[in-house]
Amino acid sequence: MNSKHLYRIISDKKLLIDYLAGTFTVTELINCKIIQSKDINYDPTFNVLVDLRDASIQFKKDELSGLLTAPYEYRKLLGKRKIAYLTQTPNHVVFTTMLASMGGIPMKMKIYSTLEAAISWVGLYPDDEIYIDKLLNEIKTQLTF
Image 1 (cartoon, helix red, strand yellow):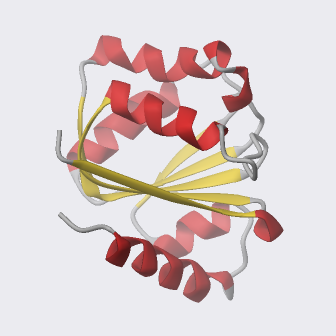
Image 2: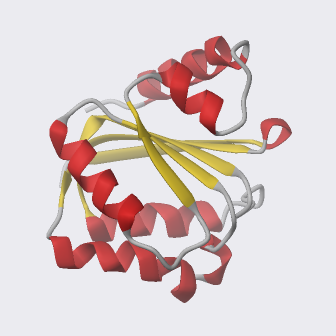
């Protein structure tokens, strides 16, 4: 698959930013989370902002359970936190809505179409929007296809 994933951990804001571009399978998404969990600065209680606007997710409904069981299989992924999905296509909304509606995990998930709303929900301030937007743009420029 032609997929690119970069993330940044912002410890002082207790935030993990995920940026995904290209086409991802459910297995690839799980592997991205496992890689993050091995980062020395990773904290499973940090809120997460996932930017899916440049990504496409290929999934079957029965594969979504793998995303929900992964935190239990890889205990370091399990933590009480908020996850904001930044989306722009109907496919993103379907995928993240299905994911958010499945219970059994301590994470709260919501879907947003604007960065402003997403950062507010994960506990950041309006002044943080410029910083987060700049960081996302820096991440995007690091990826080349």
